[in-house]
Length: 453
Ligand code: HEM
Image (cartoon, rainbow, N blue to C red; front, side, top):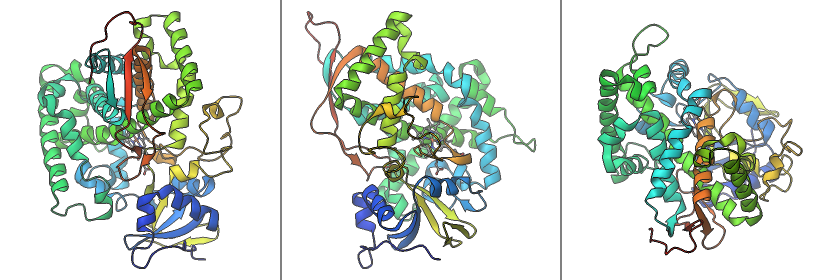
């Protein structure tokens, strides 16, 4: 059987407008009306949506030869580089990932904890005693700073200077547009993206050469990459090293900024959870070295649950795409070769059946006693699944907990305005901006606060 088409599309436009307005509402509606497999039309193209845990599991379990990502993510090629990651063959992709894995696993990630803490403290040093910040903007700056400092090092930071955040913003300036239109059209945003990439690659190469030559210990990951070889023994070209470093930073920083923003926004909206998190932070500080307590993420079980609940409600990536390289079937439906396949973490997390009362903020659903998702295949999809599950998950979790631990221990925070809603037009589904947060330094009531931003 062919998958059924979701009704309600407009002539020519199909579901384009409904998807642009609220993709999650559209996809949940499709699931409720038609079940786990259906099609929608966006900008003249048919997408086969697989939704719900079992259907999604079948996509993530499929081999790269059955469902590939090369064409589906071709809009990322100008950012990641020709022949890099999704633009590589599956075998080349595996080789490239194998090169970066050592920097994103186990002990390597734990060793970044003091670096992450120092980065947050340095950043907060510019805030003064009180003021107001746009949460999303601040989380974006912080996550670029942290990723760069951990994965490339101070040498690159020194070379790039104050342009760092602007260059990364320009690199992403094509945003969702390149998803819908040809990524090489001569548009100003695409030109900005290409200029930023050229400059960043040049600066990373300079820094990497200098680290390798003068001080390999100052950037161990970079110097290891610069002398590494592919499995056939050939040396990894320097340009590939620079592209890989840039790619993992970009792949991670905007997703991390989005989840960090939601973790904080939801926490500040739920005073009962904020009090529990603060109590946990106080206990941690009194149990050990208070100055470094905010890097001890293992003890932050309550904060972890709040972060994972934010991840469930607002996964940074609203949809993941694949192309059917071969025909396959699911639930009696034929997904023809060449079909573009879509799965949505956000819509899946909100389907009734896996999580009780899925629209409700309820971090305790992840407590060991309740663990509502236990036994469900692929219940949480924000980091993808199967063999291509995100390699940066541990890095991102640690970073987000350190950010919020430092922030909450330093300032009293208050979210202004109504409950934030997701901006689905952004590259990642961040809270709509500006998302103002007021801050006031803790424990200095008697003093006259200095002004921040
Ligand atoms: C909250 C933060 C993050 C989220 C939500 C996230 C999400 C994802 C998702 C959904 C995928 C799979 C894409 C797909 O299959 O279509 C993925 C893959 C990947 N992510 Fe992340 N990511 C995050 C942070 C990071 C960080 C910090 C890094 C690196 C420093 C990173 C590096 C990667 C890489 C290299 C892949 C490709 C893995 C593969 O396909 O085998 N991510 N990420």
